[in-house]
Image (cartoon, rainbow, N blue to C red):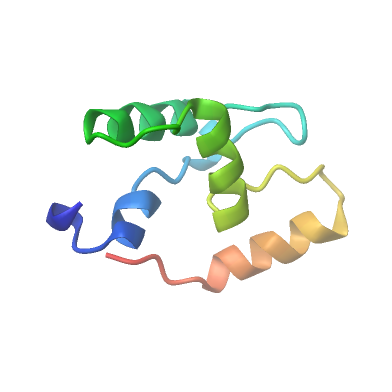
Length: 87
């Protein structure tokens, strides 16, 4: 993670591209959470399966799985639009 400069920069490099984002409220994993989980495990982390990592990514704002038309989804997307990603 030193190569990315910070833990935050490392994590945000796994942000899903718009076309790869999870279906609202139906997924418990995603290609991004699987990739991050595998990378963390290679680095020696424990208890970081894809479902746990998916929930973490939701909490961090990397994944917005609120349903289309949901007020919260729109608020999250606005916040994401002005957020400066680390790194």
